[in-house]
Length: 368
Image 1 (tube, rainbow, N blue to C red):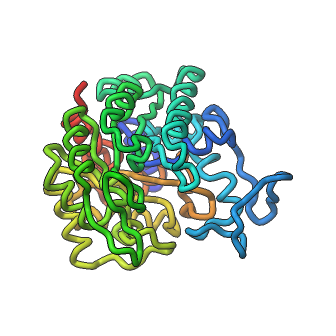
Image 2 (image 1 turned 90 degrees about the horizontal axis):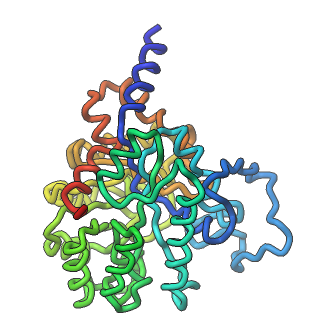
Image 3 (image 1 turned 90 degrees about the vertical axis):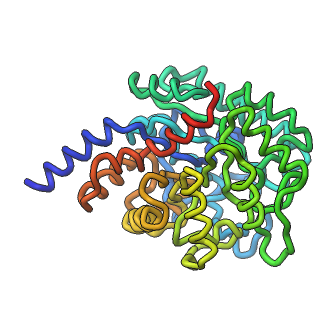
């Protein structure tokens, strides 16, 4: 009887929550024509699936990518994990949708970013239950209406080239969150690049932080190196976020391959604590975690370091290969609420973790 009551209690609590997820690469799959938002794509078994004829992959031997992805993951990416039906089934209120550019797309960075933006806007035009979110009022309204929303983010400022003024254009299109880089060096900052000697922000990067603050775009620390991390914290006049990480996977910032298990360095803890002191929020990543239990352990470890009011969800689902067992896609988000409630979390902390913490940052930074 206790289990039934707990499940019912968790379902009601999850239904009450504004649920925000701070990172997804679903725009890649949309722009590549692999899926559509309205389709709950049933992914085939990776063990029996074969690529469609004439599908081209980079020349990997064995057939895996640089971060360990097999061909199933390479082909499907985030598709089948973030559809609108899955979001609604999982009680998701807001999905952050990132513009990420692969190295091979850097020679057409602006065009690729506009393609991905177009698809986000197009999905909203076609599906009345989905909206592009630009304000906190939008978030509260779609929650009341039982809809889901998407907000545009940059995972690296490469689409701008070296034109900061283009931030204003993307702001008009819905950009509300932006990181300066994704591991690699660009005109704005250095990312963590393994054995490459790196610096922090460039002069252009410092100007970009100022303009992001002026526009009311949340600065994301994801995939920056330590030097840029500390410079951004010093320069930003507004709270910042780290959209996707785990306390057991801080090496994600350095572009290493899974599993990520080398946390506990003093510098990593200092960075997380400094982020909390800035009133920022870290989104706990699901990618690369073994199962739901490990995701819960990551959430609780982040809470012990930063305080529960500085932790959120930052799924970054990318292929079944890297999805946690028991938490394979967005429709399964209620399992997090049920598990936290069973572990004795108070309702207010659960509501904060599910979305209230990110909402607090958006209220402080977004201008409208």
